[in-house]
Length: 188
Image (tube, rainbow, N blue to C red):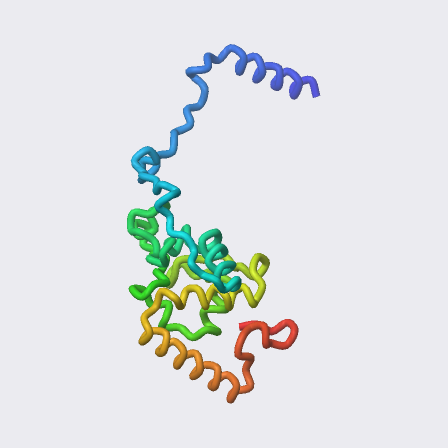
């Protein structure tokens, strides 16, 4: 006990006598992008909603708050120079949801599940958190409706066809169409 007390006292004395400059140097982290070089958009230049449908107004707001920081405010996806240096680390960039991306290639149940349960495999896709605790199923469908507005008529027609094909295949197989259709305890 006395040795422990002497050792503790010695360490306190040593710390008090050590000049501040000799204290352990902690390296300052560097950023790939200088925050001072980022230009901001004047709030007057931001687009305003033109939707009269309350569902689309809500979906637009939720997209801007929950999705846009990764997928782009106009659905253009993550810029190569995005903070986090995703591309430099060998991970896939966050995909665009607009007509330049491939979101329209996927059936609604697949997109629904990605939003509800997230994407956890960074080797094949950029990881995305699950929004099942933040968004109701109806709000997720509203987001999908909003995202479709960025697609061409042909892309919307194709996506409607693959959605119907998947729904038909799942119904014929006796599988739930959407995770919310699954019996208690079963999900995709």
